[in-house]
Image: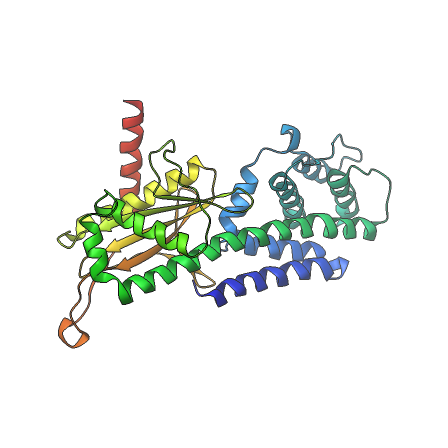
Length: 350
C-alpha cells in the first residue's frame, strides 16, 4: 500500500468523525449512520469494527440494545446499567454500540429519550440534562472514543502493509536469483520456510519489533508481530514452484488464505497478511476486493491482505512475449479454502 493511501484512509476517517462531532444536532443521527456505513464497508475498518462487535458487553449484558428496544417500544422508564469499561478495546466496543444505536434510530419522536439513556450508559450519570448537552456528551465520549481506537489500529496494520510492499519491490528488482537459491536452503530450512526466514530478516531490519510464536492452535505461523499495545499481526508465506500447474497454484493460494484466517481466529485478530512467492511464469489474477486502494479477500470474517512476490527468472520484455495470466474465480478459490478447512477439522478431531 502506498503511504499516501494510508494517509488518505486516516484523513477520510477524521473527516467522517469530524462531521459527526460538529454537525448541527438535527443532522447528528444521519452523520452517525453515514460514519457506521462507511466503516462497515472499508477494507481496514470493517474487520476491526466486526471484531469490536463480537466482544462481550461489559458485565455480559448489552444495555445499549436493551435501551434501543425499550425506547422503540415506548417505555418511559427502563432498567439499564452503565457500561464503564476497564480496557481500551472494551471501551471502544461500547462506543461503537452507542454510535451504531444512533445510526439505527429511526423514530425522531424518541430522540430525547434515546440520547438520555445512551449518555447514562456511557458515564453512569443519570442527572437530567438538556438534550443538546446529552448530544455533546455522546460526541465527546462515544464518537471521539471510537475514533481514537480506530486511528491507533490503522497505524500498525498499514505500516506493516507498506513494509511488505517495499519488500516485494526489493525482491523483484534485486533479489530474484538469490531468493531462488534461498528456496534450496537457508538457516536449515527449505522452500517456503526458508523464504519466510528472509521475510523475517527484512522486517527486523526495518526496525519493526516482533515476536515469533512457535505454535498456535492451528500450527506454526510464519511470522507473528506484536504492536506497542500488544495486539498481534499475522503473516504467513506460501511458495509456488516453477513446475506448478495452474491447479496447484490455486491450491497453494487457497491453503495460504485458509491458514491466515485460522491463525487470525486463534489470536483474535480481524485481519492478516499472506505473502505468495511465485517462481512461475503464471501471474495469478486474484478476485480481490478494493477500497481506498487497499486490496484484500474476505475469508470467514477475516480480511486477508495478499502480497504476490515474483521471483521467476523472467526473460527480458522483448523476449518474454505476452504475460501468462491465470484468472482465479472467487467461488472456486473460496471452495478450495473450505476444503482445506474441512480437512483441518477432520485431522483435529480424528
